[in-house]
Image (cartoon, rainbow, N blue to C red; front, side):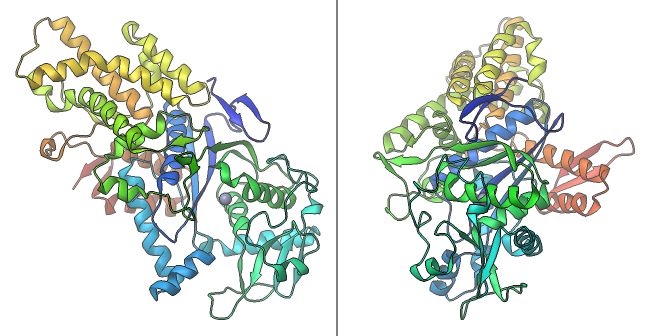
Length: 499
Ligand SMILES: [Zn+2]
């Protein structure tokens, strides 16, 4: 494969090569669970969902880890406001997170570690840093000594002398005086009165923010991973600090590729909570913006560029989606009338892109689509391929709607049918799935998120092969909770039924 990605670490467009053939390990910085997710989160996680889907479509086994930060000042402030606890606020917002991400068709990460459940790994890593002389404690606080990491600043291209003090905006004056260098950051914070705390060799306290990601990468994926993801606002200090901690503790490069998505702007200004110009995913969906309209809107811009959010741009995306969707739905709504075979789950998977290359009538479009995504995930060009393909299918949908029976030439009908199934397959690589209106949904043609099930079955199989039965059971249970029952056949094939 010749996927090229812009690597923040080298500032270059590079050809992607995984550490292990056929496998890709990805870590993505997750949310701090104190509130609903906003459009910026949708943008980031949709972009990375496409990266993951594309890698799967190229035959890779992708392990995707994304964390939940469930220890944080903002969560504590919310708990105080709501007269609840840190864990209650986290639990509630984790549920809301899944609700939003599921609605947007984002494949759930392989595993989602939480800071509160990774404390051993965090303490071990701090201890290792201390032993190497890169961490020091002052009255129960532990700091990372940035001067000990010669490469500090390599991701963000900052030189310590140029850096502004209080870069993360959270350093207090009092804290300043305890540190050996103003750039040092907290690995462990001593407990404050009335706040939840956890035991440690340095006394009761809680971990700093940056250390959780370093500890989780090591715990879930190992010392060096293929790709590390995040928003461009995380490059400094968060990702710079992750690199310093991990590379100092493990003596290995943390990630080979660092990818960062651009921010969402409103009227030229960055969307942020503090500016009061942010929109939650929930509010958009409740206001009638369909999940796939939002996906199309986000993917029409390149993931690294700023995305301008306006009512007009959403309205334009909605129109575009209506056209594309009519083509995607035509074979679901009318397969009997068209005498097309009943759509099968396989048609919605995307691990078969290559098979289209050999089909003469489709190979050009398929190649254009692959070339677009190979070019640093150029989703807007990939979308234009979908629109080209959708034209005859949209007009077929229109004719059917107006009561015409377009059936005539059998060969032409067959060609339309294969074009439709191809379009559905390609759209799925971008996570764009047909949206039937409520009244069109029937048990026969309701499209469950089958890709997710198929992926989960694959992951479970891999877990069983590596004798990780606890993980395999967890996957089975998660599917069961969603009403999906797995049946292991004697020949090694796992089938599933929906209850
Ligand atoms: Zn992180």
